[in-house]
Image 1: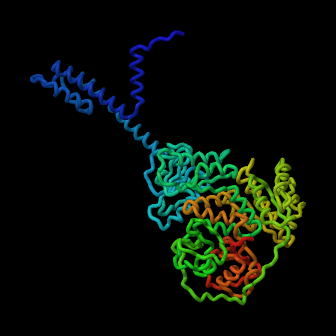
Image 2 (image 1 turned 135 degrees about the vertical axis):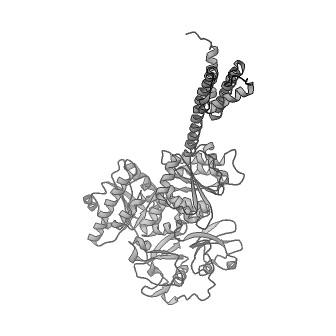
Image 3 (image 1 turned 180 degrees about the vertical axis):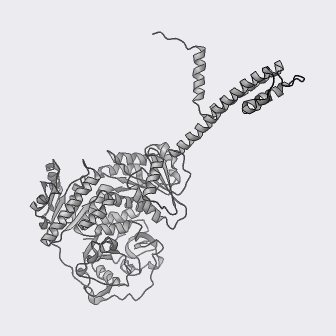
Length: 634
């Protein structure tokens, strides 16, 4: 087929169509030009032919154009026209005017509609400053927003900006449905791709106080997080000052690459690792997940860093008794290093900060008390010995299972055992790999359905010391996975009541809304992964140094949180104040900062019996089943 050159008409049509697609302003200019042409032509005809209503007088060129303009704008003007020549010309002008005005109204209406649609899509640039920026939409976002609202209670005009790959109105409606009252915090949503520099620019990251990057629910989620970090740190328009970014990474193998990209501007939360460590610690200590939640959310007491010049020259042990309603747990040295539960004789020097648990940052106040009434007659000086070995049971399986068992190995005595029971194929390689790496535990696997009572009875449930229930995260809906967990919990509690033996049960829940249902089954603890990670992201966005505190908590080599028998510290059945408990724990190189009352272990309205940072002067009568919450190396 031979090529034919475009005709003049085709060229004109092509260029005309291009101008029409150029936008509202160009269309308006076209209407103005056409209207002017029509008015000039009609006015020229009237003036040249002297089409007038008054046959005795003539009409000037300007007057003729003015009459044409008036009739193009108002069709009713021609009602009293006389003279057929004048009427015909003015009819043409009026019809042209009606047509052009109709187009004008349509263009303006469409322009407003497009603008409203544009605003609805959330594409306009954010002009806020000192805001908290959340990159990526996720179910975790509701916990993060709720916590930030509480954290911002004493601040005016706080702003949270969200960049999500979802419709702006949908995001706003979901937030409104789940968080109806945002108090003094304004929440702004924008739709965009969290991997695109231009979309990230839209939410003004350069003026943000802190930035939270959430991991997506997608294959290879860490690559998405790393790309978002790159879009911030390598942005050609980035600010000169360092960013304060907190990001979620799931796989430890990707952490080094993420650190290279983020350098010292990003604090990473290794979510799978954190959940595994908390689960491993909690299954051996009932109530520990409640303690972590209390420290991480803003509803109760939190961890604060504060300079206290009046403690300079005193020891860390002395600082433990210096506050009435704040609990000292560590020090941040002048060089920035953080140490939880340092040696009791550590001297506090100028520039060092106290790390304390308190209700708010303005409640970390020295009590000034000199007589703290320590009752040394009830203090114990020896501890009970731990059992040499333990048996653990893992029911169900997911990608966190191997990490949890590896963490359990750090705390167990040599000769301990783990049995995994799950409907999971090809577990032989996983078990073999675990046994090759574990030092203290031996792992076995049994294929079985965790909701069948007969299969649970077959593995002799009462013989186990600790039980962990993991949700199936692959090939199963979240609600169905949680339903299986609930059924398994009910069976386990029934077995416990029938045999008269208590064994600690830690259950993973995928949906926080199902926790209230699970409380019927009286599980000792719940690990809700999304909530735990959301709380950590929020806390670290407010203070990045908290990362080092929780790293110490989760590291088997450092000082961790333990719930130890009260009988290791003080006599039971007698009223003692918490100063006495602190003094007893300090002699073992431990920091006591709370307790758990066994009587309330299954009562949510009593925080499952957990009391963090109690007033130290208040007397408490402990029973032998109660526990003291301490920071200790073992």
